[in-house]
Image 1 (cartoon, one colour):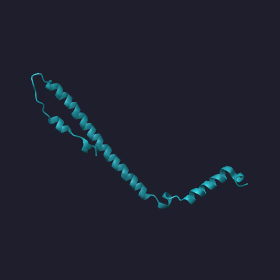
Image 2 (cartoon, one colour):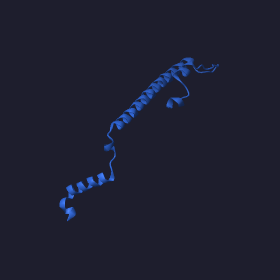
Image 3 (cartoon, helix red, strand yellow):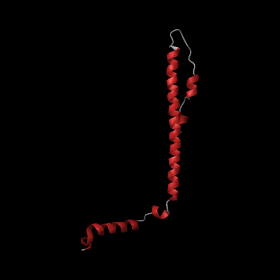
Image 4 (cartoon, one colour):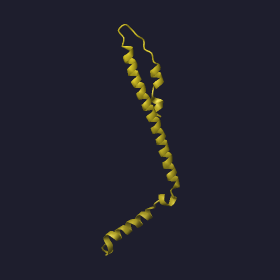
Length: 99
């Protein structure tokens, strides 16, 4: 899962404290920027979870629909294909094909 590859959580970003120095950054600007990052992280995390859930739902739906199909329809033999091709040729070319 992609969430396993993410190093930081929104909470970790929120709780991160930086050391200050005389020529450091303005704390308010850093906090505002980190707030934006946290909001984006939460949005991305929510979107990822929704997409993963939808992906799982669609896979299950596909498996269910495959299981419900009659086996006779899913297995087409070479004979069936040749028979269809022969009928198609007769229909398109008519009696000219066999003259």
